[in-house]
Length: 230
Image (cartoon, rainbow, N blue to C red; front, top):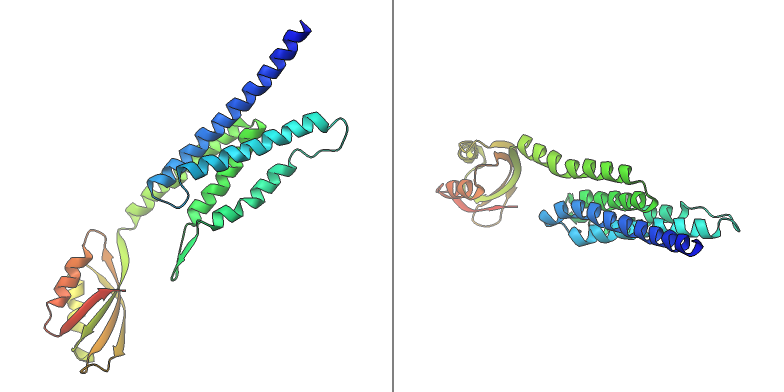
């Protein structure tokens, strides 16, 4: 009877470990799938690895606590705290700066959140991990779609090389506005080439209007030499 109890106790312990790691794999994969779908730097596999690794850290903390707490003072949350602070190096690797734009912050935040989910699963806080996963997934998917629908226009910077005089630049602005775009700012830059003037337009145009059509319309003006997006 004693041998059976000992065997059952060990089997129950390992079964619990398997369930926790598999759940961490599932929950991390849910968030990672959404990131992978958008071709982000950290995708499906990365989120799974972070979540499962964090879960293992907390399982190890629990194991250390149960084994050594009768003899020494052990803090079961210590390893988990190192995960939360240490995941920053991986998140930083997903952040990319392109000019004044910064990309990857959402992916970095999702990695940090997934590590927290793994910690919750590893310690056995299943309900908190499931609820958090649902909230994160809805935040990434639903709110992104709402933001896209609300943002029906996009900002574009056009650079136009033209022979038109400064006082006649309104003609080009009128062509741009015919496409439903709004001219936000215009910058004049003198050029040394045959009296050429460079106009830098900052415009806001509807998403459904192809930029190439606007560029072709501007190029049709007899004074325009080149048009390109900056």
